[in-house]
Length: 237
Length: 222
Ligand code: B12
Image (cartoon, rainbow over all chains, first blue to last red; front, top):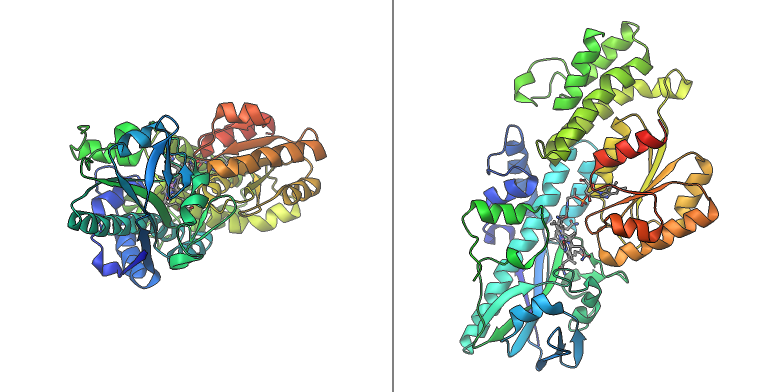
């Protein structure tokens, strides 16, 4: 069974400080006139977004190949050692996809190539944040269902991160009907609309959700890592 | 050096587009790249000087600050906008031959990939540093790159990719360009790309940021 969700822009709680960090300004203080541009972008985004998501709970999953692969309803995901370790105690998984829609990227592209590149860039960044925030909501929905059955959930993990091949998106998408939520996948495993994410969440009685996962990632320069550090969230487990 | 050109370079560095633009706050109410370029041309400053001694030093300074994390993409875009506004006044002089760009850079995001913000940023910075930039867009295959090089034989090609899956395409395109037109220089970039990959696929250069590719071009062409 496929569960679908849709959110209006106003249902999402956007963290403006995080947006500033994504734009590059680390202290959450946006110099003039970028603060006005952000306000303008937020206003525009309201009518541009079509935020939708879907998730499912496949029936059977088991770890194989020295625990760096997981077989979900007979389909093998090469999630790699790092993600496998995080999902280790899961007894089942949820798969999800989520998008902010094409509108925001279309508008952003138009502005970037024309009159207002800065606003275009801010809209693009806002689009990334919208889809991430919507996925937070979707994850809460998955957690609610899991809890009602006595399970906890892990964090979410996406193909393309931590040595999990982005090509595995083809396998992940095979669990959803074609063009589900308006998201399609190219041969090169790129989702369309661009502002989309996909991933897997572990479920089980013994799994833990953790606040800080940056220690799993080898990226050196990353606004997210820096932001977490500044916010004081950095203790692993 | 001409006082106007010093001012112009500051307009580019700080992203002051025109008089009406409120950015940057410390230059509110002052003339911007638009007015100063026009005035310089009226006063008879050679277009080549405007490009080489006014616009380019400003763009170079912002590129270096970006690399050093002292400014971020929004500020770079302000500078690029100031630059392109000034360039509108210079375009006729490029066409007449009164001013020359340093060389040609052909850029595109490789087949299978639709990411374009990073590529666009690179294009803007390269243009701002005195090159003619031909942007082929996204999802571009070998034929299109090869065709563009045939029309601009001295051009350097820049390839952008943001996914590991489309890096494969980068390898194929590099090889096909080199097979069809030996001697063509190919430089690559994008989040998952690195130096080892560059060597492996036989590309000529990898740069993590736009300033890097400007320096590469300057070393090869200018
Ligand atoms: C924001 C972001 C997102 C956003 C928006 C994506 C978008 N493109 O709009 C969202 C949340 C939607 C997203 C989703 C995904 N993402 Co993402 N994302 C990023 C992130 C954090 C920043 C990308 C960005 O906009 N950067 C800003 C621009 C300006 O930078 P840039 O494009 O890199 O360009 C700069 C340089 O690379 C360079 N450059 C670029 N091109 C060229 C060319 C030349 C010639 C030169 C010299 C230089 C150069 O200069 C530019 C300016 O400095 C990167 C990680 C990172 N730090 O880069 C991951 C990243 C791109 N994402 C990644 C992945 C895996 C995904 C997903 C597949 C995850 C998933 N399963 O859901 C999806 C795919 C989305 C899709 N449509 O298919 C991977 C891709 C690598 C891979 N494994 O294939 C990255 C690299 C993260 C990682 N693993 O390290 N993502």
